[in-house]
Image 1 (tube, rainbow, N blue to C red):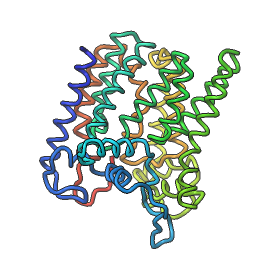
Image 2: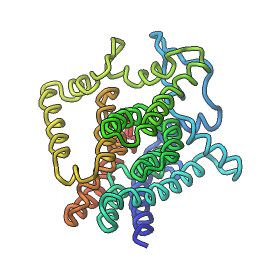
Image 3: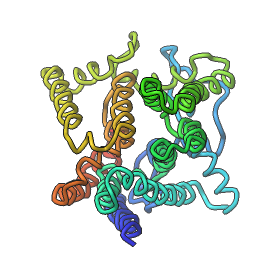
Image 4: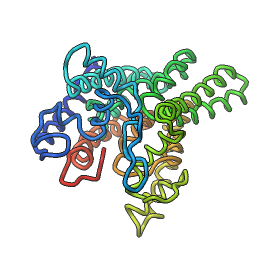
Length: 370
């Protein structure tokens, strides 16, 4: 019952905030003024998922006047929109309804699996606190709009759960599914590579870690290869991803690992070094907390491996908050304290208002995507 209460309560809170902002939303590229909840929940990248659902992926990449690949559907993995397409075909309902219903269902599954995951390292009571922190987090509304996040979290949690329980077959199924739902292939490969080295050193479970690492690498390559085959351009996927960064950094060379420095100079040109130093200090403090270390090596290797992936490939902007969500296991480091958990939940509820105001609702010529 407690888990059901978390699922229902968190969705009521997020729905209330979404309705509040929808009632104040002006006309924008995706909706008319004051849209209903379903239409308000299909803005931003949800529009791309709708395009994929209705027309599939383009065989020809769009080219801008400057000669670069423009924004297009290949930036978005296929499993979620194709499931929505199936749901639309079975029910006859529009994308705006089916996508949200499926996202809500996937969120409920994610909460159930996250509870099982946290019980392995925290116990039942603290595990529930951790789940509640995640369910009421500032970006929690993303789990009930037309985005693939909730489904991606289901598959990610299955990977982590399978590793903790040594159910290698489950990990083997979930890794490709996660990699074709959200861009999780690279961080999963990083995690599996580290775990493989640890297993090799200990002499335990070497074989499953080796083949799962190879599977993660193959899953990472799958979508870029599919895009290359379908479009005839070997760099179709990477060029498409770069289309979203180019407005910030121009047409120059974009070396791996430079995005955070470029972003800091874009947003905070006078104090970029200090901003990055502050971020690094926060990461170090969280990493060395005893409560974090007690989460176990699987969850910590994933969390820090995923952050390393973001450092390698990301140009941080307003989407950074949503993109940090897969580090949800770190909520377990807060859940050991009842007071800290309550404060985190309250902060999450307030944070949802801030996040929706800044990132989701469209205000004029908006450049803060969620």
